[in-house]
Length: 271
Image 1 (cartoon, one colour):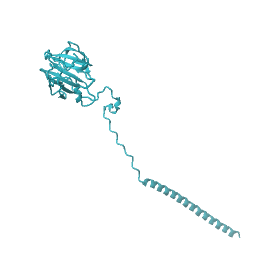
Image 2 (cartoon, helix red, strand yellow; image 1 turned 135 degrees about the vertical axis):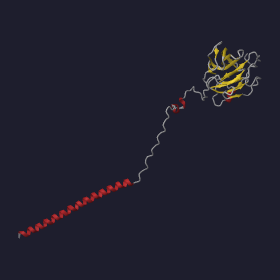
Image 3 (spheres, one colour; image 1 turned 180 degrees about the vertical axis):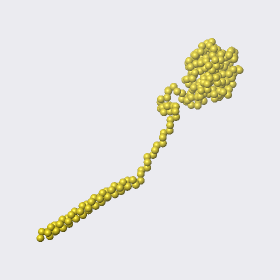
Image 4 (tube, helix red, strand yellow; image 1 turned 120 degrees about the horizontal axis):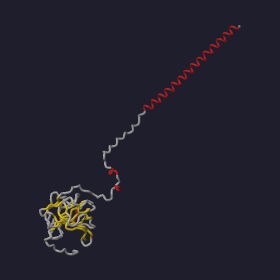
């Protein structure tokens, strides 16, 4: 009787073990399935991320143009940093020794290295000699008559860049110079030179500032400094009407006079 019981128990044990094995194996399959599912999901997610159309790559900015070596820093300055004394415009440096007119067998040089134009007009002195404009003169022209009864080119207003020194237009000796009253009201300065080519004549320069020579001093054309710079007159002159830009620039008045020719008094003159 005990044997059958043992057999039955054995059979029951075997059946229990079989169920446990099946359960365990089924659980493993579930775990494997879950892992597989997780892996698939992760792979799918990863795949989805990589297959989304990528955003456009950031535009690569073109490299900045190289700054030329030695480029002037003034190109970045505000206009307010410019020196207040700087002229509103400038003209090329023509150098010293450039002729602008001929008279009495002599050649006259520009009195400045920076000339903008030369306006010829009638002198108010009857002894003033006509000047012949030369091809090397800077922008020469003849102004309208002033009804003075003298030649149209017996005087010249030579417009120069502000601040440039004034040098002798001809070689010779200083006869006189200094200050005088212009038009009975304005302080001005002048120099008169006896030219080597015509010692009895007078080469007169007016509208200058800071005379640097004295009576009897020898001057050399294009070399000797006569004055620090031209005088900016406090009124508009005839030559200023032809200015290309504002403001008007100063000019040096120049004429060559034969003193042996009597001069008629100017009506309304200061004596």
